[in-house]
Length: 417
Image (cartoon, rainbow, N blue to C red; front, side, top):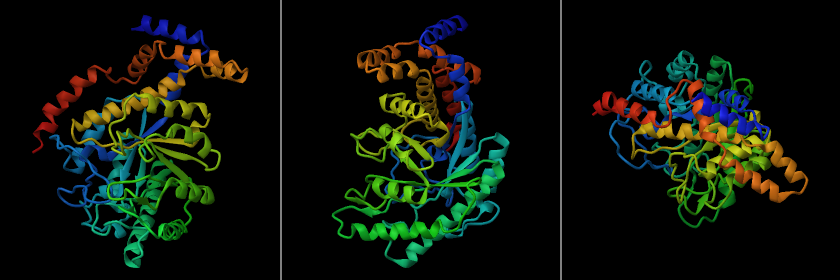
């Protein structure tokens, strides 16, 4: 193993790339793993909670889904033990813990409902990020922050305000800012006349929500767009153009989700532009198949392109990396692990590119040499560096995770009725 790695190290060094340095750099880049892969985005507000409404759908009924908070956390811990790198955990508001307080509706959530998550976070040294949950609720039947019904709109405004306070609490407790993400599914299935009207209401709702100033040392607000969803095929109020303008005007973070754009768009190309005008961005790494299907991320062209652009901007400190996918048709821990490892692979591959030499060719106008070196990079012994990274992080190899996950299924998840 060491001789193979040393050979790879020499080949990269010939192009000016220090593999040891790339590995150490990646160890320090946190990835905010989403909690909702483990139970199909159901949350624990009610027994047997499931997704209904809000433009989100999880397909598949593979056995072993987490049914309780403890089961979900156990699955998260197993996932983290099989993935190299540094992690945060992204939690949705519908994962509130009511075990010691009794149920509270979304507009009555308080930090106490997330104390057990903060305690878990401290025990495992995994900081938290947070999301308002404006779906899967009787009052989320189509319009929330854009509703012309003031009662409905005020309910959701209050919900997001309370989520910001919960995020502030998390940030204070963990000593690093919690990113609070705002995404709504508001839109229309068919032709929509008052497109501007709903967006005017949305801007007003957001202004109200953000009127309470919270230190960025504890909370960073981010807004997330979408091109369409189930039931909102013709119109979504929170489009990319709307949120890009809002984020620039108000200097919030902008969430860029790989599945929330037209299928032919190069989402990676957006990073360099967005970073010129907003202070920071939050990425949701996903894999859309024909639509925003949230398939498990793979080490594919799209994910590699995103990672390459992250590195090439030179602004990794302004880019917060998160994942967002859910597959209920396969082993859920396996889906988590594959996606997180693919994210790590893409980042490592990007850190190992001979960008300095490639840029020299580009600046000198030698575009043939630029293209040739990019092609040559594809066959460099990346796998040996990846194996070394996994070794140093004390996690199994790509093949070893199969037995690990199947063993966990046999001994743990298969026993869940």
